[in-house]
Length: 189
Image (tube, rainbow, N blue to C red):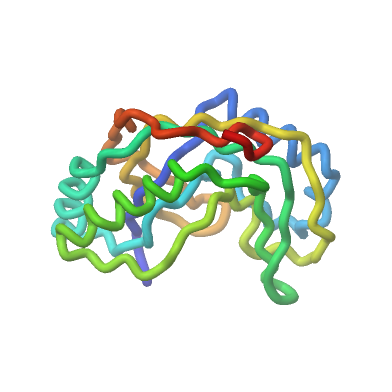
């Protein structure tokens, strides 16, 4: 896929982003990434696949976003994870537990996309990518916990290459449904 791309995602607020950045910095791993860290301004939680930026896709994604009814929830990021192949290791920050409301949001988005005849092929896990192309493969490890309350999601347009890659917000929707239950950070109800 070439050129600008569209996706539905959640973006951490400034306080959460600062917490995630500090938690990652505490690992001392930044130097091992080989200069391939994603700028923190681009850290996000993907909620859909990426689609070419066309007028039709924009319209359909805007319509789908407006259909989503889901509750706000909290993700508790407390671990660093590395996966992949040499030269293209994927580094991410992850929660050890994912609340049911996260899966409910993904299902609501998938249903809204299907209602607009948009294919959603990939599943999404709770994580924030800090590097897509790290050179080193450090061990997975715990990190200082950071809580992120996700109370809205956006339609984003990503464009550029390397450090110049950035997201532009095109639309925003609040998560307003009544929560059915929230896992606490340690996994209890």
